[in-house]
Image (spheres, rainbow, N blue to C red):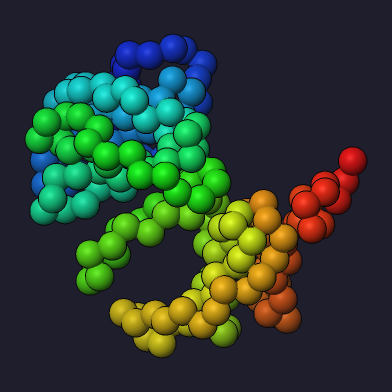
Length: 184
């Protein structure tokens, strides 16, 4: 075990971590100040602190491209960081409050959600609430194959789910009902 001192304000929340196994670096999201840290895991030293990723929560490394995709809910954008230049090179807008992300290597795609995608092992289905007014439903055909079944309409701002694996029921809290808040 080791302690690695990082720059930035004390007491500000850290969020997701991921590995860049090609360069042996740990990538760490510092949510409060909006900084992505690149840490050499062989020396436990900070390589670079990359600002400009406001409200960074999710962080995902794409092997071969030397790029990091960040979920920056502070501006509701995705940050694309080039590790060769150590700069944010693109900031495409996305749905409300992007959070976690994952890289699907067989498809060469980064998937971003605004909370956890839930998995029902009995039905082999994944449910992702996206705050957009839809919950996406995917079917796992086998360990390497998934297909989208539908985008199920829900109220906007639904961004979390609970699932009962015994009944296969999915529960989602609605913060709005046709625009106005459900709870005042």
